[in-house]
Length: 305
Ligand code: AMP
Ligand code: MG
Image (cartoon, rainbow, N blue to C red; front, side, top):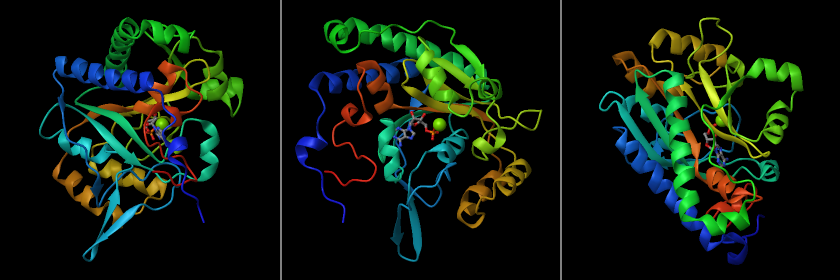
């Protein structure tokens, strides 16, 4: 049986780290509001959630004769929200019951928070520019406020230089082999975008490019070996295309029926992304693991308070 972690282990987070994390959520929220975004409340349970591209343990709740899933990401709700408002964001709690091997990565928790944003009618490039500007601004403000802490905690802290470099997924794979993401992240001194991810590496909702092989999506990568910061892209929004992509991927249609009914009625085109708050805090504070980036962190393979 899994043991409960001690409270000391569960809360091995420094006060300054919590202050940085709190500040950067506030700064990013302010930045987005100034750009015309509104914050929507997160969805915690729903009959539909992100099927993800990797398997995790089931996290659902029986309710009368139905079932709710705990949110793995708010992707579908963001698409539906586009009907009401053109620019939205949410600090969205995600539960993904990852297997215990994931713990070694230093990047995985089973409960984490994404700053999840979406823009109606936008392109991937619009989202990349927005995120670059948001991070440059946020890092500059955090540097000013936490100068002495960061000097000690993170010798390579710097305000990212925009625009970020674009690296094509297939070219990087060819040059550096299967571990290219880690290799490139370790070599890098600045954040960079990984773009044009092959269709089988991501979910059905990422928009297929005209070449029918790669997606109009992107991952943001941190330098100094901190690896993936964010994933996002343009979304599929047309019913026929979504059905084709679900068939291609082998997705379960029954569990997606509520979503498909809404897509049939029509949803707007959009683009967006999700940025992990614990990973951003870890990167800024130069922490060895996301466990140290939030209070009451839930690490894969353990129970904690
Ligand atoms: P995804 O769309 O699955 O790439 O998730 C979006 C972002 O959420 C990632 O780029 C990470 O920053 C963050 N994230 C995803 N999974 C985890 C996890 N298990 N623990 C912490 N952060 C995560
Ligand atoms: Mg990702």
